[in-house]
Amino acid sequence: MARPGVLLDNDYDKEVTPGRYQTADERDEIVLRSTLRIQRWVRGWLGRKRAAYLRGKKMEREAFLRDQEARAQSEAEEHRRREIQRRMHPRTAADFEVLYNELEAWRLQETRKIKEAGLAKEQEQQVLQQLLHKETKLLQTIDRLKINANQENKEARIQHTLNEMSKPKKFALRNGGKVDVHTPFTTRAKELQQLYNGLNLPLLTVDERLDVLLHVKWTVKEFDCDLTRELVDLIDREADLLNRGRNPKMLEGLRKRISSLFLNFIETPEFNPEAVRFQIVPMDFEAYLYEQVGKATAKAGTSVGTRTLS
Image 1 (cartoon, helix red, strand yellow):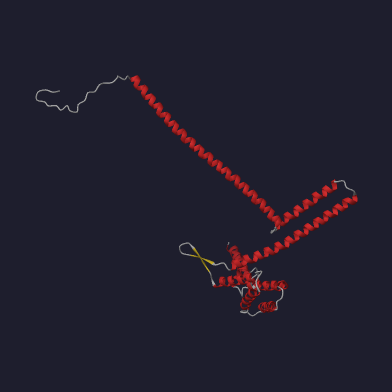
Image 2 (cartoon, helix red, strand yellow):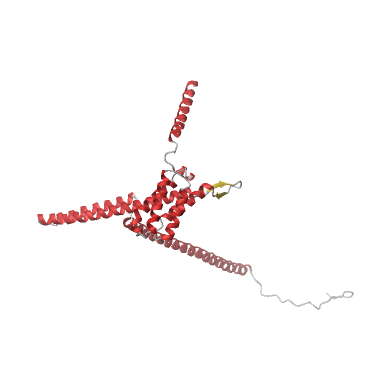
């Protein structure tokens, strides 16, 4: 307030007009409306969040069910394909057991149909003879499949054994890792495996076959024994027949004999040291027997001494 001796600056002063008076009830109503609006927004946000979560769970469930259905269909198809494969190309004893069981079930079913048909005695006997002829043909087919399976399984076992012989050794490192190392023995086994596979390769030209035979010959001539001498004679015989232009089909028996003898060469520890691990009976059986008897005797003596002290 201006008075004598006082200077007031009123450049920035402004007049304020009071508004309408707001009662406590009106203020409470405004607070209530605002509270309800905030609650509505929050509940809408929570609802949308919950709906998005449920939609995600639903999509995951549907995707899981689709994957399960696709996996079940794939497994069923794989099972069906495997069952067809084991009947078309049986390999194991269980596969052949399935074929024999199904053949027996088919025979019993056909026999029952014939018996229930009410045919005349002679006609029934004729139909049964035809059924027996079909069964015989099927048994012959199964026997041929068994021969083929035995040959394939034998070749697979041979290849597995050769792969194990030529597999590199694993040595542990200080840091806990392992390293593969080829020793002179595994390298020798690998070379013998390659020669064996070369002997069994089909569709070779005469020059390629002669080259393989020459490598095998010089490999076995490093050792002098009955096996190597017989193998060298057979190799020379095949080379002579090839040079004379003989038909390769006439040499199948000779080639099988050479392959079999060379496999015996590979499986002999004196020629292939890695073959020792695959010997069922040790080469020095008497020493092995004495060693086992000595261990058993020592074990028995220790047991008797323990009983005496107790």
